[in-house]
Image 1 (cartoon, rainbow, N blue to C red):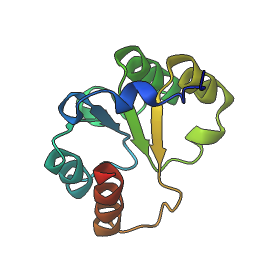
Image 2 (image 1 turned 60 degrees about the horizontal axis):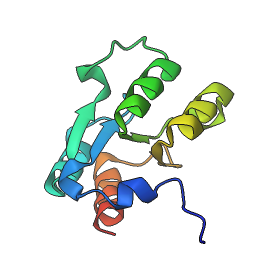
Image 3 (image 1 turned 135 degrees about the vertical axis):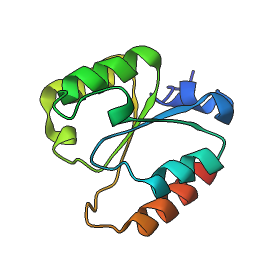
Length: 116
């Protein structure tokens, strides 16, 4: 028996059913369009939460819905409670490691990643 990765349940879904939650620090029209052009559902942080909503709160919310998180907030990946929630809910987490990328560079990265 082979060990399944934590993201296997995302691979099995049709692309049209995948929901990508774009964190507040990353949201911009080009990033949104990259996901929409790939026939994915996009939800921006500010469409559901206030700017002061804790990471733990929105991570729990998207985990309960089986959504994929997209962020460039590297502090999020060092928060032990957030990491525990990501593991608990098996959240797909896509984090850009270079927070200084221009919008068009972010768009290009996401388009390449989504098409794989």
